[in-house]
Length: 136
Image 1 (cartoon, rainbow, N blue to C red):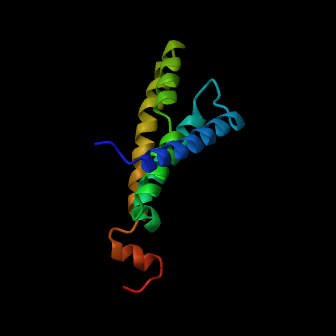
Image 2 (image 1 turned 135 degrees about the vertical axis):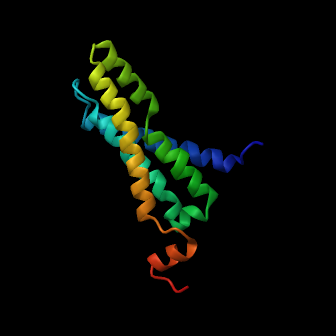
């Protein structure tokens, strides 16, 4: 089944913004040769924000915003390809310990970010309304 064009365009627009933001952060705070901290931080923050999206009412209620902010903006912001390439580079530089720490550390930190976001998010629609100060 082909998604509606508006959803595809929302993902494309969000992805362009997310990839642009990632590029700018990489330019402003370049990864050091010793360890790719910037990419690790981008991936952890992106994972955290992606896990929070269902708690945001306007995102939850709109397929367009869900597409634009989830796979679009945050999909473009986070980067598996840079993570893989930087891991390969560390291995090529005979830095197996740093590569293992980066591979495992990124995965662990992203999972912790997702769990933390889940703990901070309302569990139900009623919880979301209560957290927003609504009556229900």
